[in-house]
Amino acid sequence: MITVALSGNYEEHYTWTKLFGEFGFKLDGLAIPFAVIIYVLSTILALYSKPYMIHKFKEFFEEQAHGHSHESGSAHSHESGSGQSTALVESSAVKSYVNHQSGLYFALYLVFAMGMLGTVLATNLIEFYIFFEVMLIPGFFLVAFWGDGPRRRISLMFLFWTHAGAVVLLLGFLTIGLNVGSFDFAAIQESKIPSNVVMLAAIAIVIGLGVKLAAFIFHIWLPYVHGAAPTPISALLSPAMIGIGAYGIFRLIIEFLPNQYAEMALWLHIWGLATMIYGGAMALMQDDMKRLLAYSSVSQMGYILFGIGSYSTLGLAGAEMMYVTHGLGKALLFMTAGVLIVQVGSRSLSKLGGLAGKMPITAVCGVIGALTIIGVPPTSGFMGEWTLFYGALETAIKDHAATGSVLRMVTFGLGLVATVLTMSYMLWMLKRVFFGKLPENLSNVKEASWYMTAPMMVLAGFTIVVGLYPDIFFNDIIPYMKGVLGA
Image (cartoon, rainbow, N blue to C red; front, side):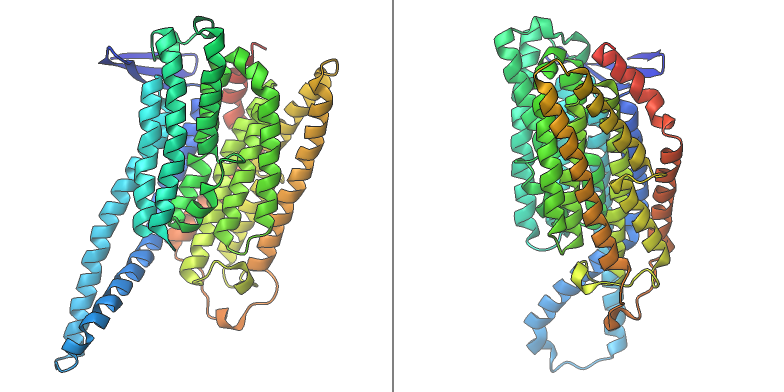
């Protein structure tokens, strides 16, 4: 094992197989913000999961018990005996069912978190691919076992879409690794790959990661999976997992294939813009809160792609900061949806209203989450968005002699229009959930337990701290982006 610590970077390498090279972990300016957000969200959502999933397991137990009692109703109709003993047997049965399900749930949850962390710390193409797939498998089971609606069908859709993306990604990896003669990140040099092959490899990688990012055209699976997944998993899938597609583009395209990146930047920029506008427009049309947040995630991944395509240090730094801010804001909003599911029993916006008076902590945290996504100071969202658009405009002005400059100016203007869309669906959602008239059937609704509200308060505090002190992340991100672009 070799451990290296260089100027804020930290690396570990382990001997693996001669076929694939070394197995290692690397923390640098790119990986640190991703790893921090994955760690923070995985920890907070593990606490939040407990009351939510116990509520869910009891629902499943009741469904099964009712199914069973209908089948055996005729047999029991002539039996006599105390109802109390039956209740005791039932409560112990519920307890053992909940314990068994909790064990399975948290085991899958930890593997899911491990897959995400491993992907952003990997130092080898094959290792990256293995962890990339490790994210998918527990995600599939978590949706299939404890999801809502036609969960098995939706989990299969999730598996097929993301696995197909991963296979295309693997083809790109094999093309690079076999031409370079090594799969280690340290050995990859664009000049060693034949020019007629390198563009194909870059396109394969971008498509594979575009599926994970749920970018426009490849986004189809996301609203279904978020609508069906248990809410703590939605709150991990959307803010943490899909953004790892952006990490892959930073590491594999911008860092390792800079010439290809220069050629693709404008196209990524336009693709990002299309994703922003499409996701925002679709979010405006939703009544189911979780589907609205899913389309919002599509739109937010568009912002990240838009920043990646800006081809400027600040645009790239803003794009990575958007991962951080989207992670914090969207996790808060999905946790808010989870509280509504547990306390109110509905996530349909048309059946809610006026809940701020009944659930003040949830309402404040939900509003802070929405303001983070909109990009209002002093939340972290403002710093991410401001930097991203500054970088995009900078490139458009600098390139005034180049042919792409007019196009970049137009995309910049349309990007600002997309922020108005973001603001519209977020404020519209807040109004329909927390403000206005309280429906009569919700007059007895209470605030959720501290188990659910305390983790939300921690995240709400974190997004404001990052908004006031963005250098917590920018001190790592900006030097890395300058180095990558050779600025």
